[in-house]
Image (tube, rainbow, N blue to C red; front, top):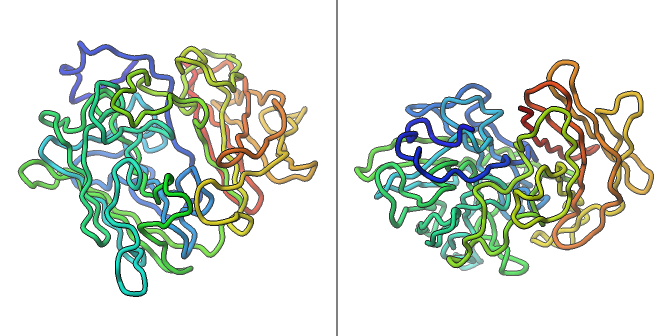
Length: 404
């Protein structure tokens, strides 16, 4: 398996390679475009491929709502549709350097009527998070676990957030295996989910206006080594939302310096399986890899208009299931209390789309959102398979499976 940055191959060759089962992020609430669909690379290339609503809320990019987005980054030298694959290294911050994340356009820093900041300063791991996949962070705390990146954050009090490594060496300022073997793939900016019902440090602009997000990675000598920019057009409403998720499956307490049991990758996206494999497990298994392969896993949310407020926890969609099309078992109809609300489609290499298996039951409301599991059997041909859930008048999300 190709689990190392090509440029770091000799440095990491002797490292212990931990079993990686695949990672990824949902393609949700599409609002802006960055690097496009070509191959990413260092040097003058936009490293941002897209910006999407964070996969834990329904309103992350909705006009006037609390800002909660994921910046999706490329994997240099690879097609953007596989940038989230853990075998394709993404990004690091050089030791002694920094990464700047700047919000512009109509993004607003949240202030009260007197002009005083409502939330100040930005808190590492809570208002800004680096991840390789949902619930797979590279945390700010130091420690020996694969997830401990050892970094700090600086807030300028306006719209510039700066992340600085506290250690590391050379090109690898962020520490430990997630940063050095996979590299961070996503930057998550959000309200502090632990603070109850807000407030949010940033607010989205009015409907129809455009916000901008810039990312700059700078080395110890102050030289710009990588950068990216993306625009966001804020919509008044986006309807119900669906995201891919690893919620309920991953190691808990990853922000603690004493948590050392997390595996390199704990994700249902970009899992690697043999031809004709059935992917049916929906239960948490310790360690994560012992439960593989997992069924593709999605998180459903009611539209903002049906949420009690704008913050986590948000209400999911109850009593959702699906019926597989007997004539074309790579497709299914998504229903809520018998009413059609969307579709599921599985695609693979030519004439080998795979099969959606029988629904494991109805979704229930609990915690944040509602979990929808979609067990599948991949086809006989090696290659990339995708499972996409699309809601009528709402969002869509797609997970990828690699058949080897």
